[in-house]
Image 1 (cartoon, one colour):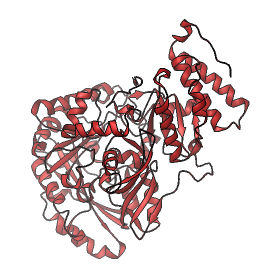
Image 2 (cartoon, rainbow, N blue to C red; image 1 turned 60 degrees about the vertical axis):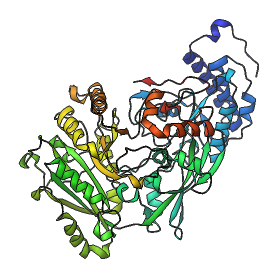
Image 3 (cartoon, rainbow, N blue to C red; image 1 turned 120 degrees about the horizontal axis):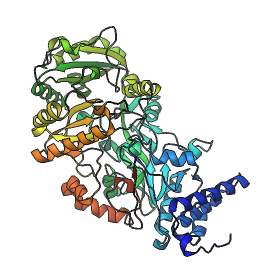
Image 4 (cartoon, rainbow, N blue to C red; image 1 turned 45 degrees about the horizontal axis):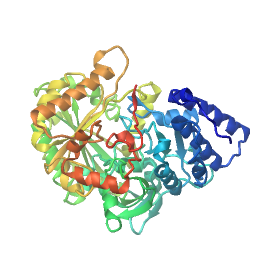
Length: 573
């Protein structure tokens, strides 16, 4: 290939025009030889990368061509478009290329190439993408390569045996899984042995590496802790390009840093997850409250039973706020039967016109069906809910865990899933949850919520303080998750602008009232905001960044650290 000598004006041409020309070149290159070796794909990618930065200086291209990556590196428009958006649908940031890895070594080689790219060539960053369920572009990078973790070569297995299937150890009660594996597939694999993970998220179509990089929470967290508290070992590709095994005993600094570390220190390629015996059935119960104090007191009592025998506690404790009658059946679940409708208006709403729903479950085996009623009754009689508001259903264990996906399919059929999601998830200290209720549930939100509002408590001691995850100081804190969807139907209160402004009002209210909330799935844009978020953990977080990703190559979409070699900016939709 001859080196092109571009004049000054051509070198200053807009980057997108250059990238477009590179794409044409790449397309011709591929069409001329459909069996081209992966090394040529890498060479072509380097060509595009360097065209967009320094013209046609092919310096690092030869090095890239020698990487020996077995996966597929592509600039196919559909792959790039998929990687440029996420579930939030509020930002769009097309990457330069997309990698479908064929091994963890592929990922390590790509990261090492990013490290080795000289600054004069502009460099490139690397972001791992699971199922794309982030909200604010956290898995995007406009100045590098997105690694599609939840697919094999070219987006399918391709007969290469990759990603590797989960490997279950019945004796040791754990499962080894690829970092891009979806939790629904982990469940299916472990159930073949009568086993299942202990801690879940409400939605199972999320990647293992994605939830472990944040926390991973659901109604089981009060008992077993978040998913990051149920990991025995990890394989991680650091920002130095090193593939490292880590655990409590081996490389513990990396292990604890990666868990809840927002992808800043490494890409999880394997996780060893703790298992338990899987139940067969679930008794699913909802009860309603009109008094917030009674509601939270009962929730806190139930999570205080975590050390009790299984027959003396519930297995799952969540709840949600009802300010709109239509949300008693929300997209998270179709709980109440049309033959047995719940009329909110018939229930007493004396406490500011807001109702609160406690959601609890009891897991059991078919052989325990005669005793589960007695266990549930004994637990319910201690609670102070509205007497006529007990609603119960019974279903299989998998059907309960996968309840959100069932609702997802219904929303997709109506075109209501692929819409902007200005979600806001907050950890609120127990000592201030009543103030939050008065100011937000009975104040800022009004009577229109545009989506479910979850609220449930967790025990702080179930979170390992050595991890990167941050929680409030109180021994008990609440998740408040405003899971709202912006719909373009002409109603102002359901617009993206209105809901986003409301989120800012909620954050401002907490700040003004001195309610020290912590964002879960945090989104900030300035370093001082991140420093405040991490609090006492910030110095350690910075130290780990310098140790494991000193060039700031990984997960730049989080906007915690500026890329050291270039600036990566997402475009708001």
